[in-house]
Image (cartoon, helix red, strand yellow):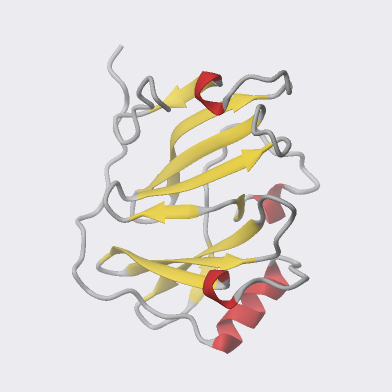
Length: 173
């Protein structure tokens, strides 16, 4: 069957909203973040559409990756935790927390995709990667690939579990 497509609002040329230091402190508290994060990775913002900006706020750094709190900022500068569609059900006790916390989070303005790449261990021979497309209110799952068992396989050989036209996961991914 044809791959599904996530409808996205038009691109806006407006500059992204900026998070204040007070906002960043509050967002990091929301994510129960601790530890030092390099200043250049603490908060990045990207324009999503005419009314919304994406905020990626660094939480802490581990040996080879770290989580970030994902927020959506409105035109008044108010932020809220992002609603991110999950590839797999989250355990009930962490559902609210982990739904807006992504590992090695990134945003590509050209493809308009929010991404995550979570290594299961330093060799990156297991873990998960996913992308999401903004639909105007929620980040919808655009692709998902995972290898749950660490067995020496490079990331390009992970099992693809879900994909859309927005992120078709070609053979090199």
